Each structure stands twice: as C-alpha cells, then as structure tokens.
Image (cartoon, rainbow, N blue to C red; front, side, top):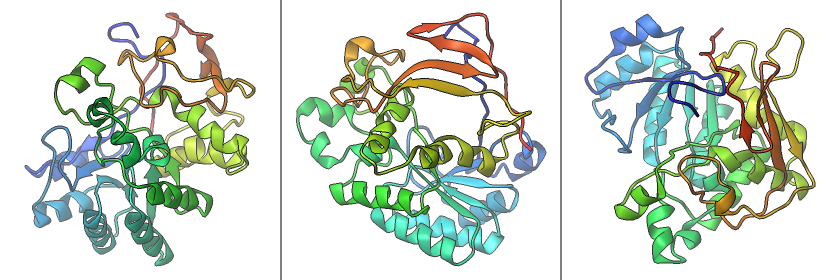
Length: 298
C-alpha cells in the first residue's frame, strides 16, 4: 500500500475511554461503526474498569463492541442488558463465553458474537510446539484448547456466532521475536482458511458469505455493502476453489512478512479483489489507480 492510500474502503470504531468520553461518543455516533470498550487489558492503554463510566459509555452508544474475556463477557452482557444497548462480543475464544452469548440471545437481547480464524484453527498445542511459536502465536485473547475450537465451530453452525473477524495485528516478525508482543496478522488468509470448512462439507458457501460479509454489514449498518444486489457496491473476490496449495512464507503479501498459518493448506486461493466494481488486486499485483474511501453508516 502506498503511503496515505488504501486499496479498499474502510471505516472506524470509536474507542471508549477510562477518562469518560461519553459526550464525544454522542457527537460522532453516526460516523463510527461502534464504540469499542476493553474490559480486559490488551495492546494499548484502553482498559476501562470504573463501572459508572462503563454505564455512561454504553448509554451513549448505538452499539458497543467489547474485548471481554471469560467472566468479563458476563459483565459486559449485564451492562448491555441494563442499558438496553446492542452488544457485539469480539473474538470469542472460550466455550464458556459461547454459553453466555447463547443464553443472552435466548433471553431476547440484541447481542452478537464474533470468532477469529486463529481461535478456530489454532490452540495451545500449536503454541507449545516450539520456542518460536511461544513468541509468535500470542494474542489477546490467547489461544485456547481443542475443545474450544470445536465449540466455536458448533456455535457458527447453530448461528450463536454471527461473524468472522480477523483481529488483524500486523506486527513484524522481528518485533514478535524480540519481545512478547500480542497480536497476529490474519486478514490475508482468513477466507482461504475458512474455505477449508466449505470443502469438507462443514459449512456451506451461503453461510460463509453471511458470517464473513453480509452479517457484519447488517450489524453495523454499513451502507451499500455486504451483499451482491442492485444499487449496492460491487465488492467481491474471485477464488480458485481448486487451489489447495500450502501457505508459504515466500508468498506472503502483508507487510508483516509472516503468517500464523504457514504450512496450512488453502481451501481456495483468492485471485482477484474487486471494490466498487474496480479491480484493486489481481494475481499478486495491486493497482494504484483506485483509492478507497471511508464508508457510510445507515
């Protein structure tokens, strides 16, 4: 990507602050996808612990997305229920969090859940394979057990999980190996990984397009995005479904220069990316003729 240029359209979430920026939220409520609030410590200094401030942040928001692990997910659900604020649980990683989400949905709450490819396809066994992985395969939330992988997949199939999000964090491999740094690059291979579940018959292609495109556009009110329909933006990818090649480091496109999925086979290979009817990527080459723009929310 050229400096100051995006090849795709983009949007932003607004960060809820421990300094209580609820008044600011009211002013930008229609210009951001959501208010993002951290109930657990992660990269950056965004943790909010004061219950009164949390309540005000929720009350001021049209929808709240949360980094909330384990029991903090239950706390976020309780505040959302009390304030009647739609809630989106980011990067769910534990079976217990899935159970809390399902219970909240069954109660009639407006609540959504997201899973990531790394929490679906990787677990603590991968982290502990070698010393290198103990540095590379670290993120927040951390990788969990095989049983949690299975629970997440089941939750996708029964519609408890609504979306796949990458939680993309493109730290350089040198940064990851120098000191403990949380986050992994995941955008580049997320679809190619998920297509494996289409090929083995676990997920049908219609469901995959819902959880990786349509649902997120509906949840956040992204105008003219998410589906192929008249008067909607022509955003799509062309995929070679017969390409099940191995993901290798030499083929990495992201500037991070590495992937947690090295050695995995693709379920299909992305050949072309089209944004608003414009080819922005084709067979390894990006075009400089198209400039992405900020999306509009309904």
